[in-house]
Length: 490
Image (cartoon, rainbow, N blue to C red; front, side):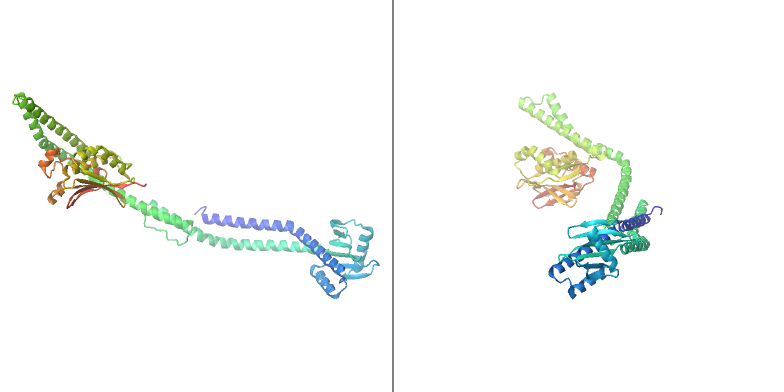
């Protein structure tokens, strides 16, 4: 692969290592000699200070100090000469004693040196860097006077230091080249371990573009690449599930298209049911209207009764027509559900406030204990319509203890809204037909409170438009109607 991450990593790491080696060589070549010279200066000063303490203590000529002094001179490659005021030798280390004596006398009596570079000077000693014109070599030396009035000079050659610096720099260059080559090979193989998981992820992503979701990342490392692999696995599962859902939805769409062929049959059935349900109220209105027209009711009270019957039946017809139109819109699919996020608890509480008078007039106790908001996805207007039908049915069929209980219960991904009323259970044989249009369990009682047998059909159509479940449960002391809505994230 061109511009592979493995090659880029190798080039970057090798470049960084080469840069660090070059920087080390540059620093070593520039500052190592100065460091050595500074170190020699500190050694000369330390030897002088030890010699000064020995002179103060009277042990300058002792064998123990002489052994210590010879060890220091050998260790640090020092030449030393100590003479008294009569120029007699007190201490000496090195072969060229005459040269050292001339240098010391020249420094003490003439304090001159054309090639001398003063590095540090006090009233007791002077540290300087001097050149020897004969040998063309440089030295660092310290000379001065001891507390016992002896004169001293200690020197060391700089040529050895320069040679050591050159050797060190050359050795560092060789080592750097070897390390660079070895590290380049090592980095090339190590980068393979880093890039292999990335290449595996690339392969998985390519397979995913072809809708192949079987490939899995199985890395065991606990790092960012492993986390990316886990996320890609989750993404693969999610895409697989989503595509499956889309195919399912597409299949449902095909079924919906097939259902459109059944619309004419539904319309014929609708017209038949409407004609049957409207026949009775129209006959009543016609009969009482003809009675008024023909003067069958002579007193005012009878005429008032006739008029009330006509108004009640007309109002019942109007309500039935409204519900039939709403149900027709839902079942035909022309009125699409508008999915939105809302608080079902607030919706129920707002409706119960408006329906409190209805419950009080019927002597019914309504219990709803939900305090916390429960957010769901759904068509808020249609949901309120479904709940209204449940509550209205509960009021009209509530008996015995006269109690209605409303609950909102979270069930995994859905919230179940239930309306329970005390009273007689629904006959088992009637349960499968409750959601059919114009079906009435007790036709006489339904007629008494003005029911049309359409309310539960509207609930069914509302829930199916939102693809949600609904149902009814019989209890010994009453009936519970319920529907579910998808929970929304709080």
